[in-house]
Image (cartoon, rainbow, N blue to C red):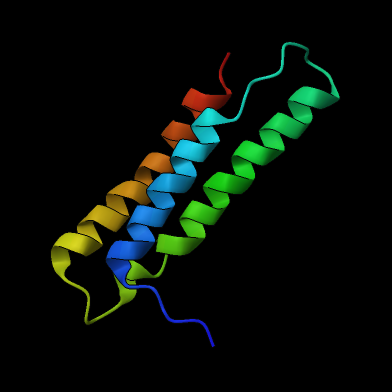
Amino acid sequence: MAKALTPDQRIKNARKLIEEARKIPQPSSVGWDFFSYTAQVKDNLKKAFELVKLIQYSPSTDPDIKLEAKELIDSLPVIEKEILKP
């Protein structure tokens, strides 16, 4: 059985996924390549969200970490727009 990740590890992994989404090369054409690019970016951001979404509801988590997770969740739509806007 896999070892459970701590909230700190989850936030770090989510940030890595966001950086990976930023590093995906943007295609020059606006056809199926752009569709695939958009799907890859959204998939990485969705994975980041899934990692941190329940941290804010955990009673044993430190309030500072909860706040950090909430800020990360709130910033995801803005990050998505930054990445996908040409």
